[in-house]
Length: 526
Image (cartoon, rainbow, N blue to C red; front, side):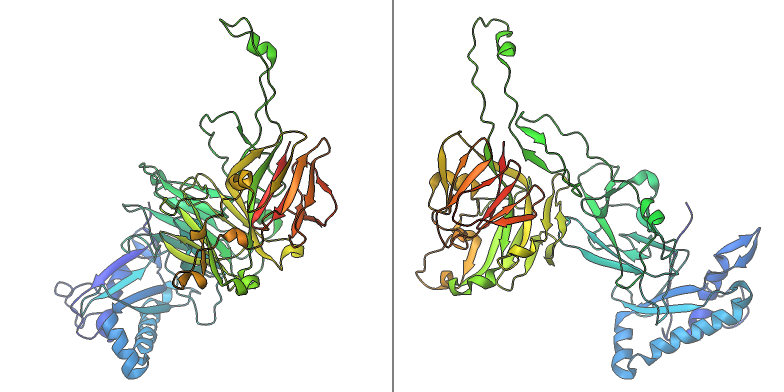
């Protein structure tokens, strides 16, 4: 494997801002001098023919002791750092001008806390790039361990060919926060220009599996040495940069299909993906009831009774996340929705959490994981464990006054429906509690709750009436009748797109469509 980045440390430098002392030792005694920057560049050419160098590296970064850099900023406003970079570039041009061609010589100088006084770390190579002051980024690279909290890694510039991202300075040109893998492995990003999608590879190839997860819009990297650790790497095009051509877009790796799921109860089946939905969401749908003939064919049974299963049910498919600013008079500060490692809504405050989504009274959404907290906006997908995905999508414009986003759930809960029986839904209706997982006072933080003796309040009081609507499964669909004149009800189609607002008269939604009441987006399955 080629060496993409050369890392060298110079020590015993009396003045770390003395360019001549860093570039070359005085005198001509080859046996007494230690290798300095000029010698390092000469011994590691960019290209060579036989033993003769034909091209040298032109971009070099220097890391100086942070205390020296801070002192220079305090005393000279950074003049010595700038003079060091300019003088080294001039020496570089003077001694290696015939090996540069049209390449520009650029030096970057930064501070580092891990260097002792008199130490300088030199970095150059194929994956080292120093942007010019006026150069704008083409891509921005970020990483995440849980798909919720993303941490910036680096920018990639139009003329930058390579970036090597890893967890150790001795290997990579850029460090990835939270790098979960041991060893010398790294991620190699190859930039073919503004009209192409970047290529992501791993080095060495036998160390990692790397695939593009279309549902997250990121590359998932896992070690082949075993273990459950993964790193997600996302590349986003900087604002104002040209978009790639259609041919370039088609070159992006196709998403790897998910591995076959382990055997599950028959009621769990994979739902047909909606247009543009490639999240692989697993949704509960009724299992086909066994035929009488199959029951009679069982060995040792001479008689059997066949009873058809409940083919109609109401399923909690998503949550409508509220704009708490509309409810300031209630004192609501934040609504906390925690999810367990299986991405079920945690109904116990002490349950293990993989991710928590918080809606604030500033109408912001915040994702909280072990990696920290970060503001999120729709559209976004979260897969903290890599097994299932929560999908955050924009709310239809007709509902945007009340809600800030829709959150499609990874684990659905359902209420079987008996044909011809009318049932009520609301915060005072006990049978509907299975469809109301947010009916837990500890999920809602209010100003009143902080007052002495104040009783906690259920989040369902925000936007959901005590008796919101009644419903009945019919041959034509789910017939709804609004029970409270103040209850807002909305009809959404299979793709959670707005169809209509539901008024006081009876209203029927077809199978596969949704009704929104309070925080809950309920799908009629038949």
